[in-house]
Length: 85
Image (cartoon, rainbow, N blue to C red; front, side, top):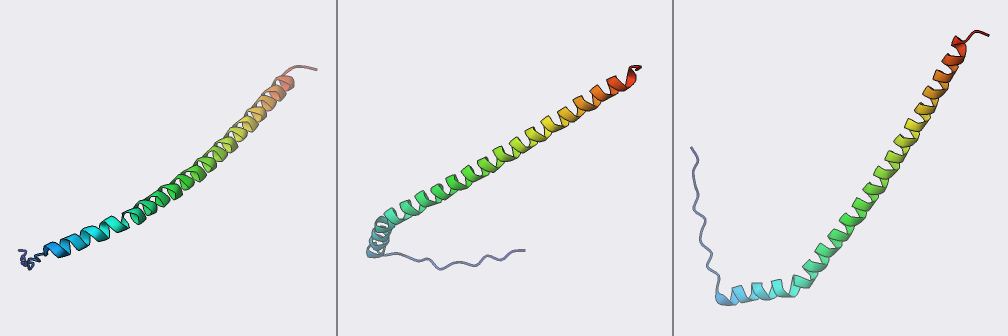
């Protein structure tokens, strides 16, 4: 069973509301700059992740080519080994 506490009502005066509105209006530019910087940092991180991803994909492609060459070489060697001299 949960008990509910009543929170005392806080009536704001018109002057308090206007003061809050002024503070929000004055700091709006700061908030916008902060959000803009956050997006810039996010973009930089995404670019770095994309770069690392492409680098890893290139490494995997190189490894696949190397394995393909090894398979081709071993298949060629087996063909030569099977023919009489």
